[in-house]
Length: 475
Image (cartoon, rainbow, N blue to C red; front, side, top):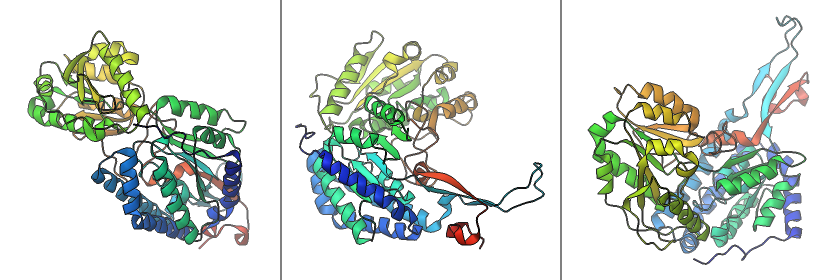
């Protein structure tokens, strides 16, 4: 797979024009009535659908993802733009709170008139992801939520799909212009150096990232090390462990085995919610069922970086003295690796978290066996932050009431008898978790609550009604 990293680069002069325009657009875009921003987002969604044929053809050529996957992802992209438009029309996202003056306020002093609402931060830098060239890229969730919040967006294109980024960026820019958005509301920059330079620019007031732990942590350090540190919403790494109780293994072993194989191999294992560790009873039939499972044919990895990272991570697991191959494996083309399940004991993972509880982005997963269910809780207590944690269990399992709260402390989304791949775009969704899953565990990057990342509270004290923002006046 030929790397396209250096095919497009944004010059210093072009960056300055983009940043200057974004700064100038911040006030008028943020001041628009939310229903006007909603209309603009709807126009963007319609434009993406109008250009779907061209965009899908480019996406398939650059990423080698199948047409059905790409079509579904584009639908997700336009849907989430529409969902944020609905949120804007509703208006509740602004979190308005009004406290009228009260001379008898019992704290011992009169309460002044205070009116609080959420307001846009300013220009936002979004780093596009590689594994979702539509839904987490140019017009994806970070862009949609930032634009909905009233923040101009500078999008740093991912090198894995540069042509698609350029074409999608043009569609988004044209649609926003047609909807009456200020010039500078949206722009795309190319090149890793451009991303770093834009991140350090004082006109950028927040940044969002989906990608590797190493890359994301480096950018996080830049963002927080600025003379004026800014919020950095990074999604970095997650193993997404699945805990199978003894009762579930006795009643649904075949179903669990099939579900796990389908989940960890989905999209050639290139999902941030891929279950990378399955914890099963040693004396159950699950290890044998998994060893005999029919694994899918090798699928292409998205780019050379991912292929190299997967090969390196899988080899490190294979080299571990306590790990052996359970199913799959063999000599592979690194860019089309065979799905592989490895196996070890849970005690080995517990004793070497750095070596065995690590992300292997691609179609490789680790199965860990346990002897006693108490090991599940013991293991959960030492986990670091995760996007998801799953229990495959039975309601009668005595261990679950103890295991569940521990997993809730470690993961942003806890699942019961389901699989973590597939993240619904909806109101109650939480796609985030304690570090290293993300750099901001109180936020989500999927769902309508994602808008809150790009808003900050402002309280107005004592102002006459005529000077207050319209939505803070008494009705």
